[in-house]
Length: 216
Image 1: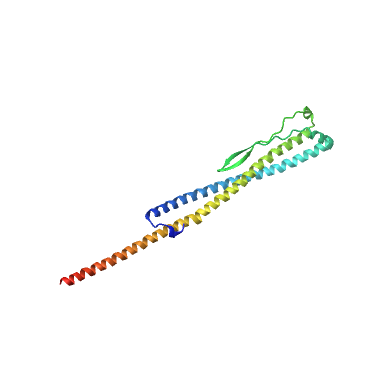
Image 2: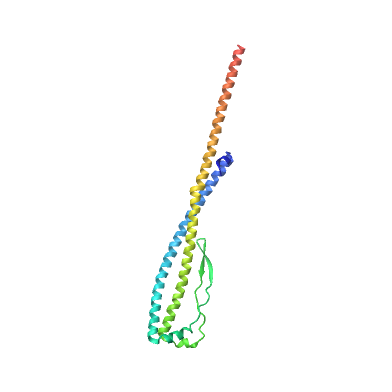
């Protein structure tokens, strides 16, 4: 709002001062929100980092178990058994609220029920491999959930930072400049009024002196 369009009235001055108070309160809330978002971001970052370490461990164990099963049962047997393994069930995704930011919640991954009784007689090495890779699937889902939440939190942190910066560096200084402009106009009006009163007083004194001379 250009200053020449501002009406220098006491009502406008009160309104502008109230807006400054509200803007400062909003700025404090945004800074608190940003701090909370950053704290949540780092907490999720630590969780995602731990999950990635767990994933690497599980993958290493999984491939080690596959190599062991391959040595004991042979690749042909492994391939035929792989055709009997249960399919992965569709993943259900809902939303949850993290510090005011909606993020996806990935439900635990599952598998179709095993229909073939032949899986019950599998060697221990193969059952170990199946268990290892099913555990990997769940960790991958957990990582996907955490990293998606991290991206959304980061976007919200940047948005909150921009809004706080706009209030602190643009809105509040502009409102404060408006207050100074209105007060300057008040001072100018007071000076003009004072000068006018002095002029009127001088004229009245001159007229009174002239009247006194004429009467003498």
